[in-house]
Image (cartoon, rainbow, N blue to C red):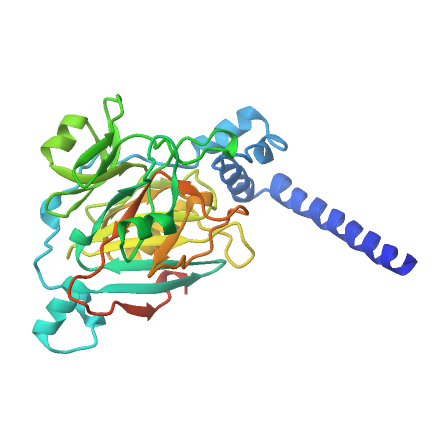
Length: 352
C-alpha cells in the first residue's frame, strides 16, 4: 500500500512539474503564437472561456482576439462559376475510362474519404449530385432538437452533417432554438429580424450560396434550403483572408463547400481527443482548398460536430454525453439509381 502511495505521489508531482513547465512555455515564451492559440481556443468554447481568463487579463484577451481573426469578405459568390452539367476534372477518381460512365458516376455517386493529418483526423463526403443535399430539421423544432442519427432515420436519407448553431445557455440547451435563418425544402421555419443574415444555403438550381445577404436578396435568389453560420472560408476560388490563427483556436470542425463542377464537400474534423485535437480555421480552409472547393464555409463545430453515413455515426463526436441534439442539419438523399456509393481512403496532401 505504501509503495502504491509513493508511486501515486510521484506521478502527481511529475504532473505538477510538467504543468508548470507548460505554463511557462505558453504564457512566458517570447513566441506569442502559443498564448494566442490557448486564448482563442478557450474563447471559442461555450463553457470553458475561464481557461483564458484564469491566466490572461481581459485587456490582453481583447488584443489577442483582435490580432487573430477572419476578415469578412465583401465579394459575393459568383454562381456562374458553378457549372453543374459540365464534365468534372475530378472524374479521374472514377473506376472507369468510359466517358459516358465517368459523367454518370460524377452525377450519381457519393465518396467517403478518411482525412488524416498532423494531430487530427476526420471524414469527408463528396456528393456529386448537389440536388441531393438539403436542410433537415428536428421533428420538434422550436421546442426540442434531434440527434443527427435520428434525424437521418426520420428523413430516410443516406447521411448528413450538423449545420447551424443554436441557443445553448451554459451548455444545457436542448437544440430546439436555431440561430438565424432556417429554410427547409422551400419552407421558411425561422426568419431573423437582422438586416443582414449569415447565409449558408442552396438555390433552386442547386448552387451553394454563402455570405451576408438581406432577406429580400435571399428570396430573389430563390434559396430552397439554408441555415445561418460563418465565417466563409473560400469565395469564388479565393481563400478568405485569415490573420493569425483566425481567432477560432483549435476545435472540432464541420464545413460545407462546392466545387466548380457542382459536387458538394461535407467535412468533419474530430477534436478535443488524444487521437485528434482538432484544427484551426486556417487548416480547415487549407483542406477545403485541397479538395477543390470553389466556395466553402464553416459550420457549427465543437461538441456538435457529427457525421452520419449509412445509418452510422462515422466520426467521433467529443461530447461526453454523446451526440448533441440539433435544430437542423445538411442531409443527403439516397441515390435513386440503386448504385452503391463508393468509400475511398485518401489523405490530404496539405498535411505531408
